[in-house]
Length: 188
Image (tube, rainbow, N blue to C red):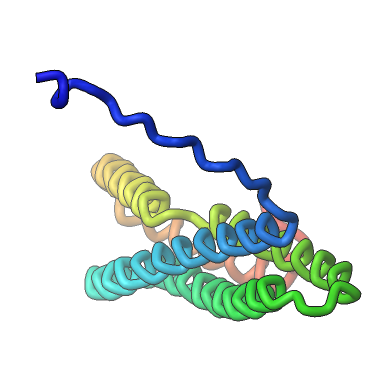
């Protein structure tokens, strides 16, 4: 009966210290993993935003679609930078692991630091990009603004006569002409 409840004593393995080289390899691999995660995230966002841009164009929202396309272009550039960083990181990992020449150690450390700093900058840049939720929020605010504008137009359309509306259109044309002729002077 005691054989089921007894604990086996596992001998403690000798603790081995992690070398500087192993630590550098680990740092590089962690940076690589972060870049790969963000790469996948950007690709998924681009697919969603591409569909959203098509939907916006079908709805006649050209300016919002254009904004989304600009964002997608920026993300594409970020993906290219990430791919370059990943390739560079892979080379660095191999160089650190195959460290056959101790005289190159300082050079490898400098390169590792550069790669890590550039990688973290790329990650920060990606986080600055608006998420798809932010784009949808902006579009919702734009929709609300358009609805508010329509409400005001409906309220004013009943109180203005045809002459008043004609005068408003004429004043708008004059303002447009004066702004295009003298962009520094805007009429009050």
